[in-house]
Image 1 (cartoon, one colour):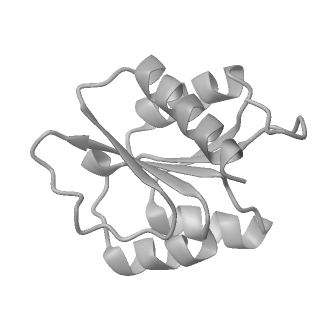
Image 2 (tube, one colour):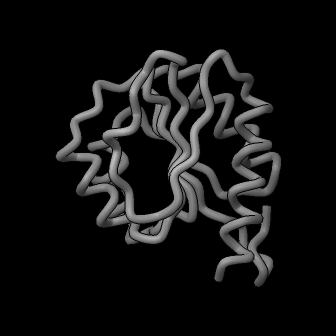
Length: 130
């Protein structure tokens, strides 16, 4: 999904489950996003810092992550202004997650297509607020 200038919107997919990460990244790329996937929050932080890339959206599959809040805080500082989409189980508590931008969530079970649709909605909302 291109932004208002026609550039692809950068999205980071964080999931330790390689199938989810690969399928979601491919679906988002197909939808016009510039998506890349990593398997952990520390890897996302290191990759983004090295590439000096600030994503518009960060998607975290919380079921596949042992979330270390210190790394999440570092990632949040690096991605200031980016929206966060948490994919979690119905019983997971993500209320303790602090993030400087808008926070959205979806509960599993959820399909890759449903996540991509939500990502597009978030990208549209984000581009309107600029």
